[in-house]
Every structure is written in structure tokens, then in C-alpha cells.
Image (cartoon, rainbow, N blue to C red; front, side, top):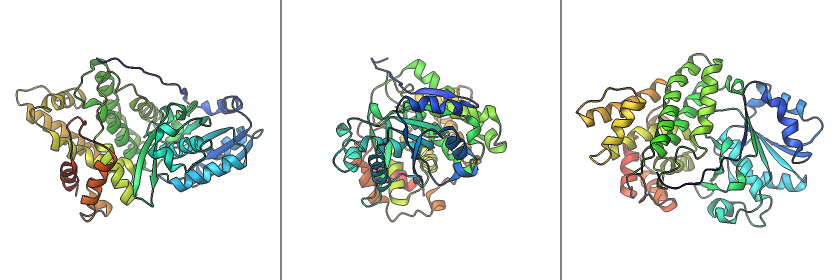
Length: 386
């Protein structure tokens, strides 16, 4: 296991009724609060009213309508609201998109240039407004990490930026807040969680304990996603998925391994940038195709571990048969969860595949991925997804 530094600064308030801690959490930072949220589901399920009730003694500003793939224009709007109202702290009520947007807003408030600079050049990020979150979907893990992914429709770019100061100061995780999610969001969120783990699991450097944790998170997703789909108010299922989301991308699973580039995420970011699709759906489509593309004598042993330790197959002498069983199980699981498993079902044809493949490599060097990928490799994987 390699040397590493692990720092997870977010204070997590997990469980039923933890929202009651919100006034105490926020008053540490000030009285002027910007509440950010998405399409308005929090007004239908009562979370918005509860937040407003608890924050009656605070000065509230709002930024509604944050997109599923948050756009730089929305970030700019949020920055202006913060400056005009002397905002002390941002309260992100929603999922990863709302939290990511809020992180970028918090960083942009103190930057004199355009906020897109901070996405392309994260080293320019300095002071950041405190971020507090109330999580409403188990998916991205943004509630417990320093990363934000922002889209720029003008340039067809969707890029990740990160800075330690963007990590939320506190996050409230009440599994009951995920009861009203549409089924496709539960499924896509689970695919996102699993992809975060898989990107760290399939690396050249081994770290036994971290891999054991990764396998446990994957098995948790497999066990509880279908339960949540069949019974949306199953607290045990929702709580396990919600905590899996946070653990999958708080840095724990990848520690002690080489800092290799991820593979599926950079490719999916281009799909989302060009077609504005749901991130988790894109990852579910890509992941088994990427797995099949990179399966070889060099990678087969790791796929055997995956098939045996995650999917429960018995070991056999035929490594490739086992490996393919694990890959097939992955694709079948996503299909059974209701995810459309090819790009054609999303209205995506081959017309922009070459352009997207070029953009993947332009934005991220994948020569240091688990299996190095060039532009032709990316194109081949995308063609497998049609």
C-alpha cells in the first residue's frame, strides 16, 4: 500500500430528524443564508417548508432551478446573489448537481474573474464560502468531498474542479428524504455510486483493505437498490444506499493506490456535455462495455476478484469465463433496475462519437488509466454502447 493522506472534513448528521440541527449548524457561519435547490421537488415533498420553518430567524436568499448538469451560467447567477446579499453560508438542499453548483458559487464569490476560470484552473480557487448540505438523493457523494462538476453549454464542456475548501462543512443525511425519488433517479444514483467505487477498485496498485471496503459498498448497492425500487419507503434500503454514496467518493476507497486517471467518468462527461443526459445512466451504459474492452490477460485476475467477491461466483480454472460472468451480471443488474442500457434509447446516434472521443482525450489524459486509452479506444467503447 502506498503512502497517503486522508482528510474528510465534513461533519455528517445521519438519520431521521437530523434536520433539526440545521439552525445550530448554520449560525456558526452567520445569518445571511443562500438556499440553493433544483427543479422544485423539495417544495412538493415538504423539505423546503421544513427548512424555511427552521430558518425563520435567518436572512434567506434563494437560487432555485439548478440543472441536473449544473451550468456555469447558474453559477454566475448564484455568485451575484451572494455578493448582493452579503451571504455568509450556502445551504444546498438537493443532490449532487445542487451541491456541485453551490461549491462553484462559494468559490466564485471571492474570485475577481469569470467563474469558468475556476473550473478549468482549480489552482486559482482561494477562499470559499462555507457550504452546508441537506442531501435528497444517494448518488454523487458530493456531500462529503471537495469536487464539483460544472457544464458549459456554450463550449460543450463538462469538467470537474476540486479544492479542499469546497468540501461541505456539514451534511444532513436523512434517508427518508429519498422516499419520493422517481425510480430512474434511484437506479441512476446507484449506478453512479457503483461507478465511483469501480473506478478506484480497478487500479494497477493493490490495497487489500480498501478493496474490501469497495467490495462491501458494491454489494450494498446490489442488495438494496432493487429493494428501494420495489418499496421506496424501506428505510433500511434507503439508509444503506445513502451512506454508500458518501463512502464511495470521500477519498477512502482510492487511498493507498496509484493516482491513475479514471476511465468511464471522463467519457461520460462528454456524453452529458453534448447531450445533457443523466450522469448515472451514462455511467451504467459505459461501465460494462469498458469492462469488456479492457479485459485481457493483464486484467483478468482483477475481474475474477470482482466476479467472486462482489457477485458471489465460485472460483474456477476458467478465469475469462468468471470475468465475463461478473461483467454480464453488472449489465444485467443495471437493466433489471430499469436503466436504458444503450445510447440509442437516449436518442444518441454515431454522428458525434468522433467529436466526443476527441474531446475526452483533449480534456483528460487517459494514458495513465488502469488500462491506457487513446482517442481510438474511446471511440471503440462508445460504438459498443450504441
